[in-house]
Structure formats: structure tokens, C-alpha cells
Length: 151
Image (cartoon, rainbow, N blue to C red; front, side):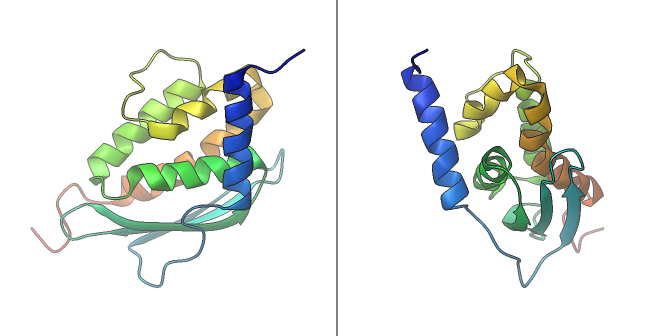
């Protein structure tokens, strides 16, 4: 069975992200940190987030190991949410999680993460793609809606 151009692009993007992950490494200054592990496949991740006083995701970094889907998803997620408000970050997380579950969502704000929509065809891989997003959600849920330092 021949691969379509989209399948080839999807595979190339995953390989590129797994060989050259974006935002890989711990942050020296952070406002939140959380960990996640996928017992079924061994994916592990520690996420560091720096939220500015204005409530914007100023920086994000991660360390961990996992399959190409997991690493690509973590990298794409970081690219997508940096410089977004905490509220916008939560909205993007919700949209992405719905996307990979097969829901019809507006994809225009999701950037390259839409390439991961195909994991819905492989239920065992959905958790590989979504785990970093759940970890980020845990951190953002702890952030106050009111910017840091204000009452």
C-alpha cells in the first residue's frame, strides 16, 4: 500500500521532532512544574512553565523520553502555547484533545499539531499524543486567572 503525500509529511515531521525536539530542557526560572507517565508504553515527561505577571506563558521546557509521537506532541505543544495567555493555553489544550479524539474542531489555531489528528486511528497511541497536554493542563489549572502579584 503506497503512502499518501500527507502520510509521508506526517512521518517526516514526527521524525524531525524526535531527532530535534523543541524546548527540550529544564527552565532555571519557573512558576509551575508537573510530571506525567504513561504506564502502558513508558512515555515520561517533566514539564516546566514560566507564567509572567501578566498571565502569559512566557517560557516552557520539558525533559523526558518517549516515542516519536510523544516527543513531537510535546514539542509542538510548547511551540503553540508560548506567548499565549493561560486562558488561551487552556482553550488550545481543549481543542487539541478534542481533535485527537476525532471531534470536529476549528483547526486554524492549532498550527502543526493538526498533523497529530491521525492518531485517533490508533487508540493505543492517543495517550502518547495527549499526555504532554494533560500535564500542561495540570499546571495551568493551578495558575490564577488574576495576573501574578495583583489582588
